[in-house]
Length: 62
Image (tube, rainbow, N blue to C red; front, side, top):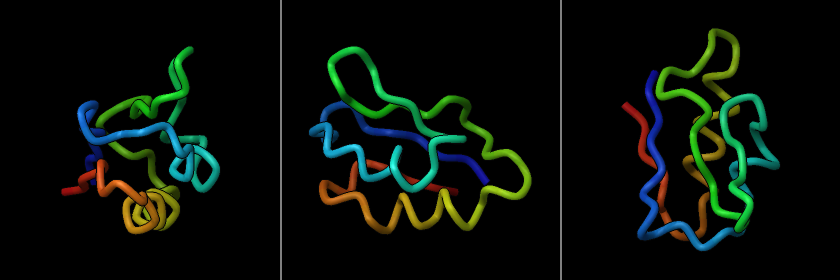
C-alpha cells in the first residue's frame, strides 16, 4: 500500500498523524507528510483509517 498527501488540500488537522504516527508526520508548520510512500507491514489498517478520516480528503492510498 502506498499513501500520498496532497499539500494543496492539507489544512493541518493532524487526524492522520493521530491515527497513524508510524506513517505520517507533521511539518514545522503543522501540515501532514507521509514518512515514506510505502506503508510498513502491519500499519495498513491504521493508514487506511487515516485516509478515511482526513477532513480535507488530502490523503490518497493505492
